[in-house]
Length: 435
Ligand code: AOF
Ligand code: ZN
Image (cartoon, rainbow, N blue to C red; front, side, top):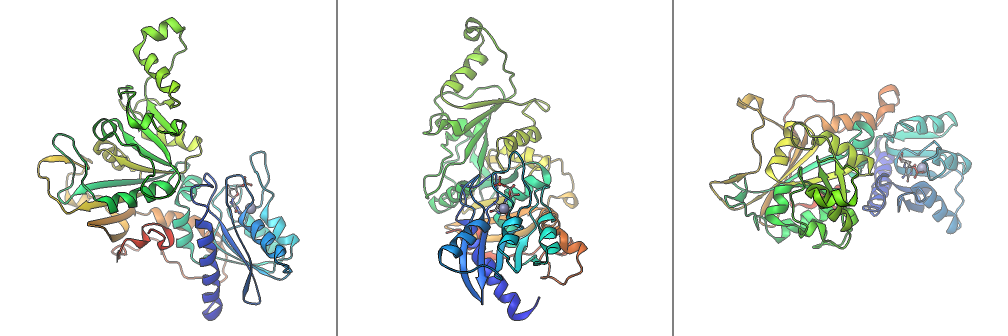
């Protein structure tokens, strides 16, 4: 596909991506999906997946067009994700492929394949076998950026992990006494709240709660609160900590290594750890026991347990020992440094020993971008190879299909210098909707 047709297709899919984005915070663990129906070059219906378990984007777009009195036969469907094609006990909605065929839609344009193992190209195949023309891969990277959590989980079976580090120019996240309030300014903090509203969970370690007593809620912008996950190996945090005292305590998850044992009431009173667990649960907090590795909760088990709860994306907000562990174990996908114009000197470093002994072995990130956010420089990057992995899965049929398709914006690692860009902070969130 070339020229005018490709430009038009990108315009309609861009609109579908914008629609999809409106569902943020409401659809996870499902993906954000948007759809646009077009006839004679004009949009006749629009839809988006609005809430978890609710109607799919394609169904909303069809309903919208019918309500406006349009006939759908022969129309083109532009959808950010491959239409679903299966039913099952956990499936809430009927297959969209049936809906598309029943309504005699002529052509379907999708940004990416649905990485869900139950779909993964089968939806496209079903449509093609029935004579529907399908084009895959337009604005694929934008569509991936929209659903990093959903894609990561479907492919890697763990949530997407984003490390967010607020630091001084000399790499300190706190002064020697532990104090970190405030290194970054209000504008940077507002950006962090905006990020929180799009993530399923924020995660911090015990020291961060002890030193900063954060609420970890969304306050500086409009949006819903993510789950707050706190790692406290031995249940040491005081019950008065703000994370345990929010308006929605059921969205606080405490992770410990201490095992729960069912004890008689009298023994609970004698066992301080059991009493603490009970007191937390009485506040509405969810307490999860995870095996230690070697002494702290195993991060890969933590991520799996969070995945079981429907969490698809995690924003790690500190402190140093968690940043270090996630980096050391290569259990991260994206990293953002908010660098404030200050020097602290001796203080607490954001990242500790990664086991790297020579410069040649340094950790390098892909797809680096630089943003100005208030008085901060924000440096943003991805784990090396992460996007290529997602992209390959997202455009699976292209590999087998000889049909010419839109150029791949992420050619498999070419060893070239990663792409860099400098912006005013707009594209920190997908589609430049960051402000
Ligand atoms: C689509 N359009 O708008 C969405 C899709 O339980 P269900 O019926 O909502 O199905 C969820 C699965 O369907 C989800 O895991 C993903 O594979 C796909 N999501 N597909 O065609 C949509 N939200
Ligand atoms: Zn569907």
